[in-house]
Length: 405
Image 1 (tube, rainbow, N blue to C red):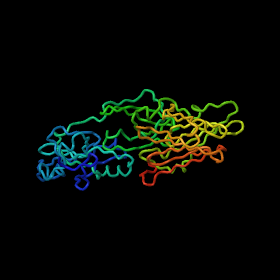
Image 2: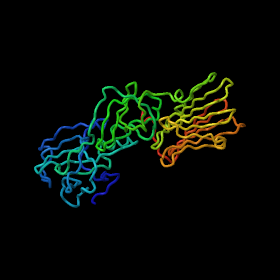
Image 3: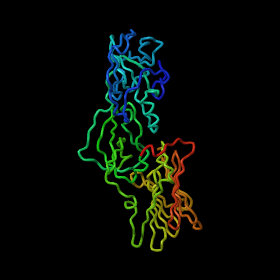
Image 4: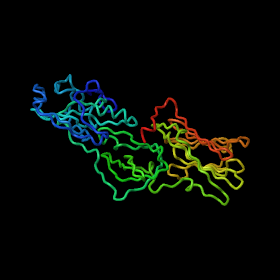
């Protein structure tokens, strides 16, 4: 195989040729520029012939290599020379490309190509590199006959009526400017960390060439968010339901109080593997004697944990799925006097550990959400007082939540 690859792309930042195309702030709206006349281009005879015109073109129009003879070269001057090969078909097979320069010569048409790239959470830094074509996705030049038009999206439509959704799992998928690798540059535009209690609406849907479905989300107030993978693990269809009303039913004489973690307390950091910036919530139910009878906690992963108390001791714990279905239940006295952990055996996801305290302590219980990027805790006191805390791990890369508002 010729040409070195990096994340599916040739590392060509040090050998890049050509100037950048004119772009807007969104990768999906890069526009073509004017065509240069042959008199202002070059009179030099190149291996590809004399250049007649150069045109800026839209790199969001996707291509793939068309045949086994497809070869990319670092420059038009060295086109056809073995020493100037940037990549061959074996390296480029299966990748999506976009052309940002079109060269019309006396021997044919040639494109300056870049591979499709994803910035993930690095949207600002990555976008700056992409608009200057200074990232590692420069693939060089190729004859137009060696590539074919490729449709990254096979179908797309707008709903006649917007469809309501609310958040289930906030970190399994994120919201993108465009579905990943469907345009020249895709990145995470929003996260669900602060949208757990927000009514969302899907207004459009599309199908990628892979068969995956994506929906376009906006808030009830009309704020545009972006595209997210359509899955019942991510979104629950329907109008938002307050978990305190859904999972806690008051008896005569009982009162319920809702507590929400402050934004400052969350540290406002976004993790790749968790939803660190999500405010935790707790609902405390007391009887007439002002004793805590039940507590419902939603940790930083948005998964509910309900604990029943009698005479100051826990007598039952129920852990729910992201879709608020019963998942784990324990009435084991030993566990409810020490600790109980709800975790998946074969699935990598955040786990919930509940620590219980003796009757001599001012604390009743502490619910911990343990993720890959950090830990979030909700401590319940016998008085009904609640203390929240979020602690991102120091060695983990996180991003400011302000980048994803």
